[in-house]
Image 1 (spheres, one colour):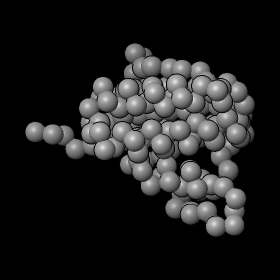
Image 2: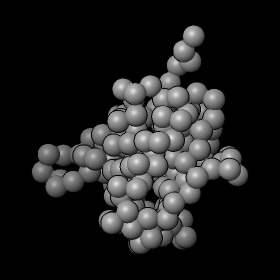
Image 3: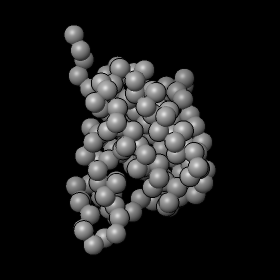
Length: 138
């Protein structure tokens, strides 16, 4: 698995988005996941996970946000950027939100559906990178 320090492929697809563009974000991820060879049963998982992260970027960041999508052999990477000041505590690794918390379940579910989710927050905003991989078919 790569790290946030690795630069993505310069040929990657990028899309700026607002709340009204979330369907375009889902469509981009679905199309790229299919083009990369992600098995159909996994595409919905990745689309759901990225949608939750994109929605969170808009809720806690500022519009517009941006998604970049690329693939490498056997894995799809989706990176969501916003100008917010960090992820909520509900995104803490291994932490399941309390039933009475009023939120955070989408991000928790996203972590369950992908092989890895990394995030970095600094003064310029938040970056969340989703890694989805699958076994080679032969």
